Image 1 (cartoon, rainbow, N blue to C red):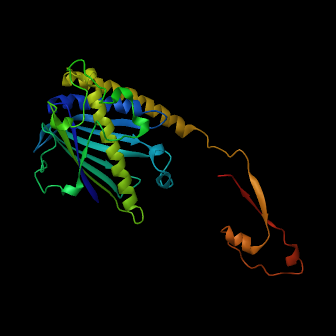
Image 2 (cartoon, rainbow, N blue to C red; image 1 turned 45 degrees about the vertical axis):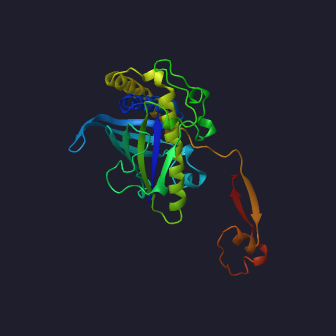
Image 3 (cartoon, rainbow, N blue to C red; image 1 turned 30 degrees about the vertical axis):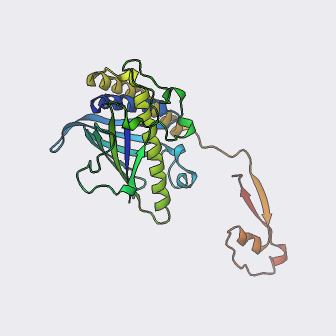
Length: 308
């Protein structure tokens, strides 16, 4: 199991981010859904917890086959999803990711939101995270994948018309007010011999990118959600979920009903000698010669193959 703590600051208050996060997740999920991939919401309802009180539980299916590296796609089905279960009790949330197809895969994210600049060294009130496992993510200057970059979400150019905040400049985390921090302790595991280290590193790289993109968007879209009530943003969330679920279910149904692809052509090769067959992985057996079938007249074996 590989554990890291990420700290992401934003020029918001915790109460503002509670609205902004719901808006951002709904809009981002809608933008990323299509072609049979994206986020399907299975459950989204109130819940209570003896320690944290009233909150919200959500369960989602994240379809992402094409986003997996080639060496993972070899082992998963064409319609592949990860289940996300989240318990939201502000200022604390907990999220788990599991996959029934990969029983040894698990990701757990614990989150605390604080009105500070990431200076709390023990925000989870247990054993402090070792300093070499703490990473500050800067929504202004840290690089994100080119495919996710949008000039309108570049916070060096961003100015909020509603709040007058922005743009962000170097050193903003120590000078900007208001400011808050999203502390995220991420533990991931994929306990499969030969794949564990590479898979866990892949998971953390992708979580880092997702956190940077999502928190940049929450700030860049502030004029779209600032001033909304919790009831209004929940209604927006509901409509986006209905549209996204409908789009995903339609795409997946089409994928399941589509006829299998056939190769455009085949080719055949003739192989007569045993050494060539062995190089191709074909097992051979000794066939004794007989008067009716002398070895010199055995027909060559013809193997059909398709291009890869």
